Image (tube, rainbow, N blue to C red; front, side, top):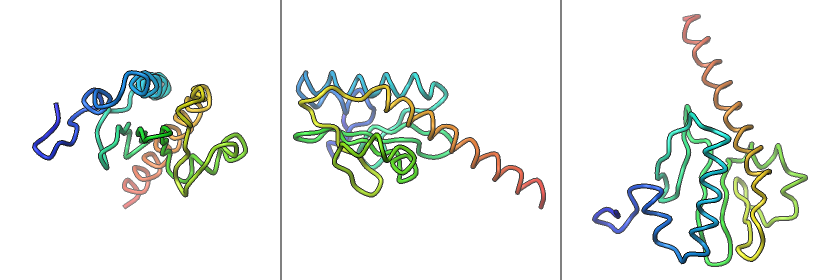
Length: 131
């Protein structure tokens, strides 16, 4: 169900707003990320499906010709070579709708982001204890 402004309240609502072929790709992304980060919470953030674990892990979204994947700049930098075949922005990569999604790569990036966020949370907790 969308809110009063027409924005989706859940990932299910978000996905339901697209044609079937796009819905299938969005579900593939969701399931892949869920398996890679089972302890992450699903949310809508910046109007996009988001997985959170000690902060944002990854976002994804559908556009006219691609699925955007947003693993923040560190997720892009760590997998730069493999992602180089896709159009990119500072913290985003575009997977064309007319090609299969690189789900194994998405999974590895999501796992990388989980490890990164857990490490940051641990460092923050240690710092807090020292005070």
